[in-house]
Length: 210
Image 1 (cartoon, rainbow, N blue to C red):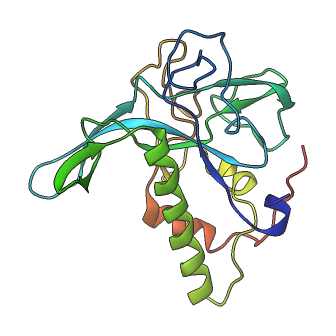
Image 2 (tube, rainbow, N blue to C red; image 1 turned 120 degrees about the vertical axis):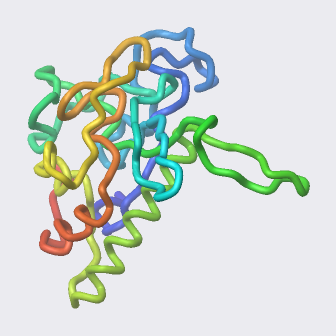
Image 3 (cartoon, rainbow, N blue to C red; image 1 turned 90 degrees about the vertical axis):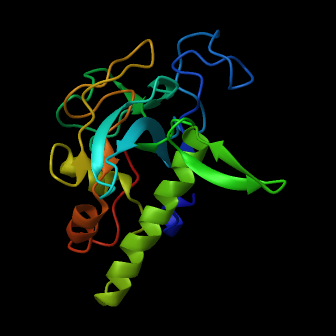
């Protein structure tokens, strides 16, 4: 298992809200959490719609992105550490864990065939989170600490702290972003400076067991 080997894997929660079809893109299937984001060994990443203030680039507004996948796993039980404000009371694992900007209208730009092209989706948000994890481990290395082996059990205790921008507006059609955890944006989008500070004080290893 990669998590047990100290490898953090970030997986998009999907862009077909909470009822993805077998293609993972069209929202006309049964109510479900999309695999592999629903696996407890990975970090599932949902999406937000992020608007920045002109001039200083500060966060002006951030909602849950309507396409963000989320829901409860059919197969995986909820680990004891997936707890805190907003976490459902059921016995199954909930998705996503965290989120990042995913709205194609507000997302990133790539140069494709010589032309700037806007991109988005949770498949963009997931590698953004991998980059955040690299920054965290870089800070730990500079502090003389080993890299984090599994992020999820370490971030759920940060639910409701300044380490995350708590997204309280927006819906994916089935679930609505609310205070604390929700099945649109998870714990929220990171305040990376505060998250780095918190996780450079965290232990290097956490159990992946339920």
